[in-house]
Amino acid sequence: MLVLGGALLVVMNLNKDDKDEAADPTTSEEASPSDDASPSDEATTEEEQTDTEVGMCLPYEPIIADGGYGDGLELVECGDATAFWEITAQSYDVADVPVDDEGNLTDFTAAKALCGDDWAVLHPGELWTNWHYVYSSGTLDSLYCIKATGAADPSEPANTPYVPAEGDCFYDADSWWTVECSSSLAQYVVVGVVNIDTPVAMSKEEAGEQATCGGSWYWQVTDPEGRTSAILCGDDV
Image 1 (cartoon, rainbow, N blue to C red):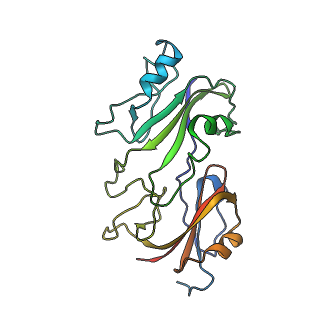
Image 2 (cartoon, helix red, strand yellow; image 1 turned 30 degrees about the vertical axis):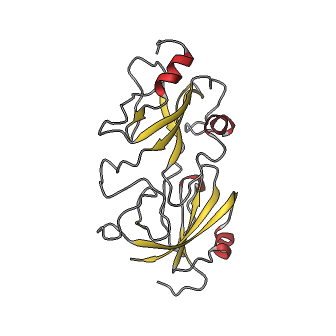
Image 3 (cartoon, rainbow, N blue to C red; image 1 turned 180 degrees about the vertical axis):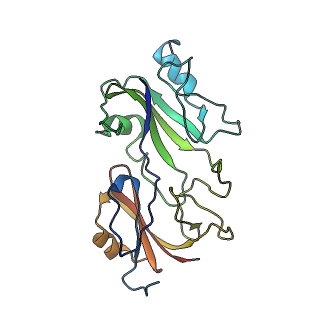
């Protein structure tokens, strides 16, 4: 049976200082008070398949194709209203890449080789990047590098798929959506950013020492490997 998978690198679980850190750091970011703040198919050849799929788009929630590309995904034209992700690279030559019992990649080497070392690292002010895949019997069938087109969340037009940067607003959502500060959804405004040149695993305490960008709260922005790529400092809206 073919199953969809993907590193949910943009998922965010917003917690205050008195709550435990999320169990899975690869899919969450935590808000903490700053130290100085007051509380507050059998288609053609693999090469032809790849050439056809790159430059095409996927909806926000990709689905496996019924036909045409075998182990691939249903494609849409990037001008289509449902287009959310653009495919920038794709491979079917990934049968040796394993996934665990929950369908998560156990090694990111193949994904980085196809997409680039920095691909799934979140950068404030930039569009989301991710990888997505189809798997069966414990290994991958196809692997995709995908980048958000900039289209809004189909279920909430106020949500845009940019990692919040200085001056941007966001809220306690399931992902790092940026919203207009005038939106009724906005809860926090970013007042400063600390970019980590080389993403590194970082504890809450270590992040607190580097959260020197002001504001009442800070958030760690992490990649699928649990490495912090940036720290956002912010205030309540």
